[in-house]
Length: 174
Image 1 (tube, rainbow, N blue to C red):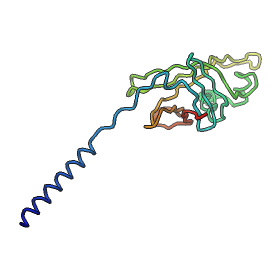
Image 2: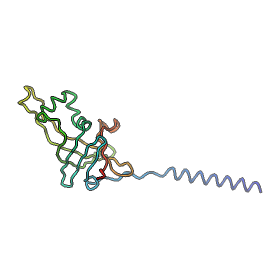
Image 3: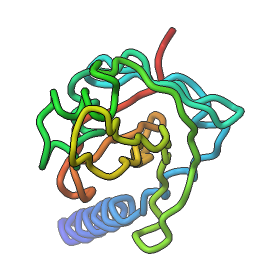
Image 4: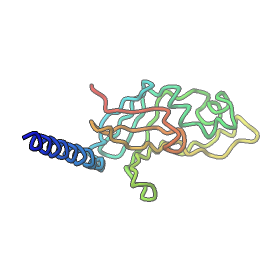
């Protein structure tokens, strides 16, 4: 009779192990593909910013934190001081908001990543201020669209996606 209990115990252990392996091997579904309808809303940033993505393709950032502004102007800041940037591109005032357009686009070259492309227009330098004015600056951003399992979020990256983000935007709860 002891042999039957040993065989029964061995079968039970084997079935438990197989069930555990089967459950552990189930793949997680891919994140949903974002649509314009998913992203048309207000997004609140980790630094206090708010980005409104509107159905008509327009966008507005207000308020704009120093953190996000620094991110937007990172290419200029490699060469110029903040005071020079404000004077040259923003009529002497540090911007606290901006208007523009937005577009959802897919990067097919890298794991089908989706981006919100923000275009705030080309800023021409005010030649009246400087003898050697810099070239016009394309003012905008590309925010990586991510899904955390609960909903979409937008990430302002420091460079490549593996280098981290400087601002994270989640759907605002108004």
